[in-house]
Image (cartoon, rainbow, N blue to C red; front, side, top):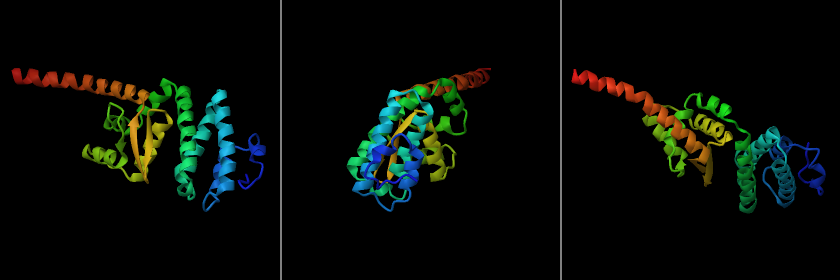
Length: 209
């Protein structure tokens, strides 16, 4: 297993993977100066490598690892603000790479999944952030019933395709459409309006008859 207390973390850059970093971090009760330095060394080198090479799989693995380190491990709450901001910057950079690797065909498949279209439609078209709790309330008003974990799972899947991103507000998350997400949300809205228009026209014709 990767040793985050190593005095020479650069030796592990080539022979370790992001999944091993997550596994090692999962064993920590809290981050300290030594383990943070090791993680910083690895994450910086791996992010630089991902940006220099066309490696969709490796980039995706690193994105998943960063999200785990920032949010999903028992030690995530002990990540200092400086490290959190730096790792979030790595994540934002990698997300732009992930979007580049994600083709329209993959996004089309995503949009066919249950509730994805509704979620995109709930988020503000101007790209403003919306709290996850407000997203859940809006969906419930439309008849959708989601547990917090299920909603987080769907939002994470959409984020993996580069259509939305989030910011943390304490222990809560706010979400917004990315530029690509706004484009696809607009297309979905136009299709929905086009499908509704003929039925409205038939109703008007019936009233006029």
